[in-house]
Image (cartoon, rainbow, N blue to C red; front, side):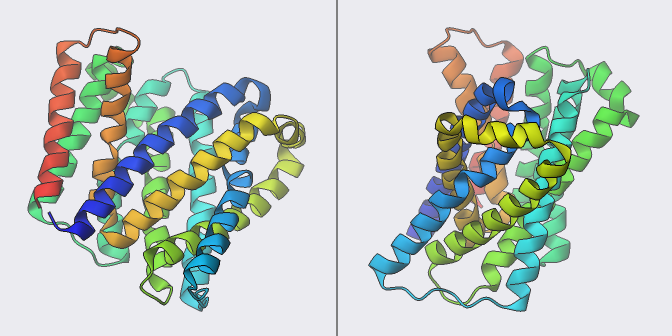
Length: 304
């Protein structure tokens, strides 16, 4: 494994860990902020961290600020809007009784991202990586069944349900925005991946903060106001949100999106390990098999 490979792998793992912290804090804020408020702080409170980090790096490293172009403007705007739509779809998924089944379908993102990346950017994964992605997806479905959230028969029955549609759509929009973010980062001039990823992050968060803020003024004004009152907890979401997105964008620039998202599934393994070590929860045999398959899929991606 060369040094460039090692960097993007470790950055991807950091993204997965940071995402776990961000999600946990968002769940803590949800009762006080509501669904939309808890989602909005992911963008609005992350924006200052993104801009401070970008400007500081450019100043101290004596690096030039990248020049924007039409291609970057298109891709970053498209990606920012797609990510907002993904967030709204995921929130709508919460209101359905069979949320677990819908969530399982949303995990098709790891497969959809490989398809979209091939069509939009022209990056085609190898047979080994493609097989690893499918193996990882099977492990995720097995994990959903193992936790007792949904049975296999219920999963099949819900194929044509609203929650399945929402799950597939949310996974699709997440996959699309990931590919568009990579296209935006790649369209910037220069070789410094930190500057390119940081610029993409800062601009996208600015767009998302403005657009979703305007929408909330019309559709969820009370939740918009609550985001200012709960600033202490929201700052934590903002910090980890900025760190998470920066790491994803950096990894997308250093490597293809599909393998990055596949390795990012290590977040599920970390969650299981935490439940076993800190909460003394005993894993079922299905969970152990799912962990093995996930680890195997990640190793296959790394060996490729």
